[in-house]
Structure formats: C-alpha cells, structure tokens
Image (cartoon, rainbow, N blue to C red):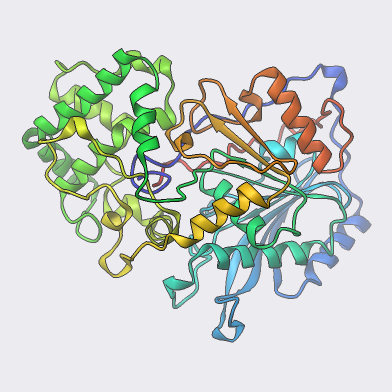
Length: 470
C-alpha cells in the first residue's frame, strides 16, 4: 500500500539525474535582481487577493518565496469557509516558463528551494503546491468529504489563475507518483490552465478489483532466482511470526510506537509489512540489489533487519502512517489500490483482506470506494487529452497499470531497468532527446539541446516522498 498507501506502494528513491554539459555550454548565474525589480515582483505578489508572503530568501540568480493562499474549503460552495494552502515560488524571470509542481503530498515543514527535472530542462520558474489536507493545508474543522480530486484541481486552478497575473511564459505541470496523478486530474478538469503535463510514474488503477497486471508484473520482473529469493523471505518471515512479532513489539515499545488507532495490533502491522516487502523492494531497489536478499536459512535477526531496511517496521505504526492518512483516504475513496493475490503465501497469512487502505485508516475515516472518478480520468486521457507525457520505470510495480496517452501530441516513455524513480534522464538517449525536445516545444523554448544555468545552491528534486504509499 505504499505510495498508494499500503507498503508496497509508494515511491522509489532514485535521484533525478542531471544532464552533463560541457563547461563552455553552461551559462553562469545571472546577477541578483535589482532592488526595483524586487520591489515590482513583491508588489505584484502582494496585490494578489488571498496570497500572503510568509518568507523570502535569495539563492544566487533566484528568489524563493514561501507563500500561503486562501482557498475555499468547498469550491462548489465557497460560503462554507476557507483554509490556507501552502505553496512555494522559485522565481527566475517573469517571462520564463513556469513549472507547476504538484507533489500530491505535503511540502517540507521548512521548505527550501529545489528544482524538478522539467524546471532544470526549461530553466524556468517553479511553483510547488502542498496538497489539501496534508500538513497545515487542512481545513479546521476538516470535512474529509472535501478531500477529492476535483476539489484539489480547483485549488490548483485558482493558483494558476492568480499567478498568471505575474508570469507571461508558458506553463508546464509535473509531479511523480501521486503527484503525477494529481497533475493529470488538474488537467482533466481544467485543460486550459497549463500548456503540457509531464507525469512521472503515475499509476492508473482504472478498475480497482481488476489488478491482475500487478501479479503478472511480479511473475516476470528480474530473474527467477531473485523472484524466488524474495518470495522465500516473505514465507520465512510469516513462518517465524511467533518469534519476529515480539521483536516488533519490543521495538515499538522502545520507540513509543503504537498500533491501536490504525492497524489495531502488532501482529497485523507485522503481516502488512511482510506483504509489502516485495513491492517495496522493486519500487526502491534494482536488480543489482538481488544479491543482498537473505537466503531462507538466514537467522531471525538477519531476516528482521533486511525487511526493516526494505520496508521499514516503523511504517505501519500509528505514528508512521499518520502523515499519509490523506493519501490512504483518497486511495480508499477514489484512487484505488493494488489488490494482490499472494498465492505463494496461502496458509501463512492470518488477516484476510488486510492489504488495502481502509486497514490503515482510523475507523472514522474508512470509506467505500467510488469507481467512477478513475474511469472518467482514464477515458479522458485516452480519448481527449493532449500534450501529455508519461514516464515510467521498467521495473517499477506502480507502472504495471499505466495510463494510455491519446494521439494528440502525447507520449509514453519507459526507462530501462528503472524503478519508481524513473525520469527523462534515465531514458535511452533517443527517447531522452525526443522527450526533452517535446517538453521544450510545449514550453515555447527553442528546440535545441538545453543550455541550463548553473545553480549550485539549488538541489535537484526527485519529486518523491521518503516513503511509499498505496
């Protein structure tokens, strides 16, 4: 359920690669903007109704703002109240392209400047948006029925309309995993807001119960020896439940972790983590890591430690799940989740139906699934969308159910051997060049090899949270 919400689903940590350019091809950072330019930009931002400037820093050649924006709790009935949505702005030029980055989760508690791959390739500005109901971007009191894909699309639409009063360049939206999905949903409901979308590793669970593609993926990924070794780890862990669960209980007690609000017991948390281990391995690891999978003869301590390094025993605790609660709620109500059969574990599991998002939600948030939103989005992407780019990793389980782009200037690329951290830099050289040229064309940048300004003070952003989701 990682990045989808249950451990096996949420995201791999491949750092976004950068394109190496000869030193002479790089453009040196521009000098800091003049005081007059600073005053003009700040005045424009402060003139936007509902937008507040929380803080500003000035990394070399840029300005970085932490902002809040007043949003309706319910876009269908603005009279129900408002909440403050957090966002950040990395400003380079009012005429440069704008990359709208929707991570699908929360921003860091203390945001710092970073650049996504599209921002680097376009040498553009970047607006990063915290998804409603994450961190402080949650209405108080919170009516969780207002957490759905249409309401978040409305949030992003208002942000785009507000900041188009400042920026005259083209707009590109991007995000990875749940952020890629969020980007698609925004374009579905407001197709005129941006000029193109680059969605990285975005799952498409259009018919939630029909998840045979995931089982087929695990039957072919890697080589037979690695698949067998991973299956054996799960089997051995469940066979040794009576010895390993006490280890988890002791670990939880030592660190103040509990299970009562979500999964309900250490035994259920243990089983969920074991079920999620193989998914987590392929989401974050590569075939080179198969050599580290412990054999069936491994000791209890070795087995416990390896599972911890791959799936993390702390994740399925009340404290580990808390941050991801909005994601699990969305997975349960609209996004869907992978329903794996776990045929090789028959007779070893104790909790039927455990591997699904309602298992990790507090009782008051457990909900019925509505299949219509994902069917609608899938149909629209296939038949009506345009200027959409999808990037997947060959060995990423989340890519087992992919979006199918339309023929309207839309494209799908698969990075060989890549996991959930797949990006344009990881594509074959021909695909990398083609994807880069398309992105730059959409953004109104000359279709030539990208010349990127050196920005040593601004790190790359791989757009993935530190832990998977369903």
